[in-house]
Image 1 (tube, rainbow, N blue to C red):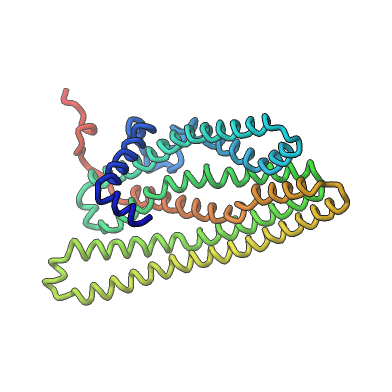
Image 2: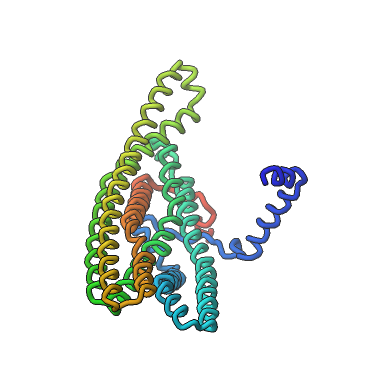
Length: 364
């Protein structure tokens, strides 16, 4: 297989395939025509920029909820379809899944444009601000810290919004559907699911929020210090060499990198411990659900097939709650980074005279 692939690459066929696939993506989605730079006011909360995009944001939320609800109910739907042995309904179900996926892909295309517009707008407006601010203020700040804040913050905005819409919302929609479905089957099943759901979410989300709010400010601080030092090494290479300070700078760089990674790694491992606690709580709830289902099967209150579908429905609708806290942690980290960038820009400096044509008043 590898030899065949190498042969294709040598003949140039693979390069042509890559180019065709690349062009197909641009032709199919037409992304460039909808990308634009939005106005950004760094003196106001960052999330106000969502007001200009609230329509597609709301539609994206509804699309993800629809998909999560239907996917959660699929085990029960399939058991019912198999029990009725109705091939027409199986086809209808397949078409329904296809329709939901098509709707979701179309909506996500516009959602992708939305969060990319937000990301590129904040990045562009930030660099534009630092380009126009009076030079005196740049002498008081590190260029490396500026680049670090802009790049590390704006590159994660898309991930932040995507996790909110495609991660956080489907988790709650899926499990809410599961709880309602289990309550309709047996009150005890629904009650167990609801109690453990509440415990798991509060434990996971609360601990991850505490972890993120505790570690992220220090992560940002060490990241900026390290980036500032490394940028200085590159820009001031001639000066460092002329003063025979290379060894000192290498030592300082090594210490900065080690300290920065130590904070980041500790935060990551702490988050992992929280996830382990959450997983154990989740599997405890799954065991209790399984025991109740087994008892109902033995009492002939449920068929074996339907009992399995109940367990699979719980698995499908609840397994992602173990990462709900991870999503909250990510959202907290990115929210903190955005606030830090906005605060940094607001306190950086100002321009005393216009330097852009758009800022200059026309002569009367």
